[in-house]
Amino acid sequence: MDRRSIGRAFAVSAYTLPFTRWLVQPAAATPAHDSGRRVGHPELTALWAAAEQARQWDARYGGANWRTSQVVECLTTRAAPLLAGTYSAEIGSGLYSATAELSRLAGWAAFDAGEHNLAQEHFVTALSLARAGGNAELGCYILGTMALQTLRRGYPSEAIDMAQGAVERAGRDSTPRVRAFARLIEARAHARVSDERTATRALSECERLLDEARERGSPTYIAYFGAARMASDSVEIYRDLKKPHVAAEWDARATMPAGHTRAVGLRLSVTATAHLQARDLDQGLAVGRRAVDILAGVASARAREYVEDIHTALTPWAREPRVQSWTNHARSARNGGPG
Image 1 (cartoon, rainbow, N blue to C red):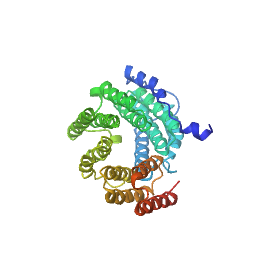
Image 2: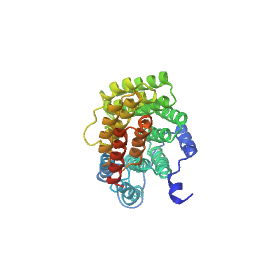
Image 3: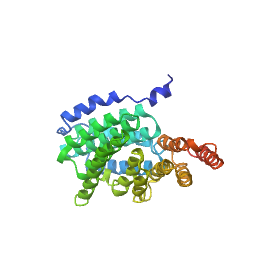
Image 4: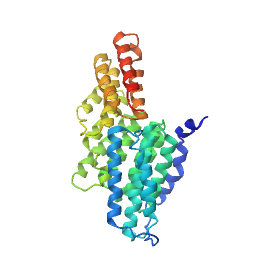
């Protein structure tokens, strides 16, 4: 194997020990630190602002975009020196948490770019930092993200264990919105193994928790997650359960706010495959073209995988001229998009 292949590899076993450690002790007391420059609220606020900016850029332009990759530079040149400074236990907890979220974002960008081994390294680091910062809630969110990567790499059973463990261990140390996110990933994994009853139950629990979240505050790093995102993922859940008409009902509820370019393109890709599953070629091609056009402006290996799903779903009609025309359009859009 060459270095590129090694860098893109995914080993589900790499998550076993970090996951087990988190289950045993999801949070530790953060000690004060006395060495180097004084660190306070302004520095901490700046780190969280950098994390939010990285999240917004990733959602709009994809994890392989050059600007998104700068989150790693922020980790090494800004966050790491602050952790070596002088701060109280309160500030220390915040620093570890902010650095954990930056690490999670670095992992998410690598995952989206198809660099799965690198993504795992960042996610494991993020989980360790969240534990060190005494932040079980953030650890729950990070584990939900790790479970999603595990699911996308073809390990739904392991993804179910991770998502369930995240919720059950974090318990009341996490807000409803964070637990809802993990339940959504669990529902997606159950759907991938065609377990409709359990998938539906997990999705209902996600919806209940989101309703509860309206009455309570949520961390800023998960403020984006609401009914529209749940509906968007539900399209994929019911597509995987081979219920395209139910998927279409969820699609009607999945209006994402501005700035979520990749999420919209991915959802349209799934909707296109659901139409094709229902043998509706006209709608499949029309929605698929919209997905391709949107995702052409996103630097994301994951987006290319979703478009490839449309190609696969079109196989029964491969000889039709309009399908060949769609394929040519998709190839042209991909070649003209960012690398």
